[in-house]
Length: 271
Ligand code: KIV
Image (cartoon, rainbow, N blue to C red; front, side, top):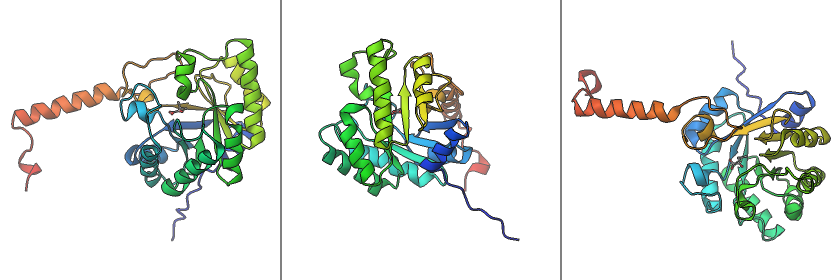
């Protein structure tokens, strides 16, 4: 008897259907082959190869320094690890803000050189021409509004965005414009829950929250934060599911002790 091993892949259409059916969307960041394999096998809907790689993989203070080549390296490693989930890749700072032609060529490099399924970029009205151009070339785009870390030097802080009426109205307008331009989803980062609820209810496309509250159509967390690899970043929106920092430290200390005590390797662990 042959077993049907066909895997049903998640596409942007699946994501849209999930919103229509009221099924929440689970997204996590990943930056390498091994974790992507685990997340995909666990049933994650979307892996975001976030430019947060600049922080958690490379140790930079902000997301600004990461390059397109480095994002392509991370994304192609992730794509080799997955069979089922949708892979979205961040366009890094400086690769799409200049003009829409540059934005398109950055998006094309990501699609061609990584095998990923979509790109994400930050901003609303300011980047609309780029969004149009990338989507016209057949590349799905995820938007990102609210706290947009690539603009950290404009904001000055990582505090909650759009608490004031003018900024909240701009965010609502930007979300509408991104939907009209053809984005398939929008990340809402660190904004009041009532605003995220109103945006989510007014759009046909799904919203994915990170610090956007429970009414978003899906949620995303940075893997290093939810697995407890990072120890100092503890915003209110973060739920930590594991303490991998302490578990890893204790395993490494155990290994060091075994080596020093000549307990590793034993007779069965050698040829
Ligand atoms: O780069 C990233 O990890 C992100 C998420 C925080 C949404 O953009």
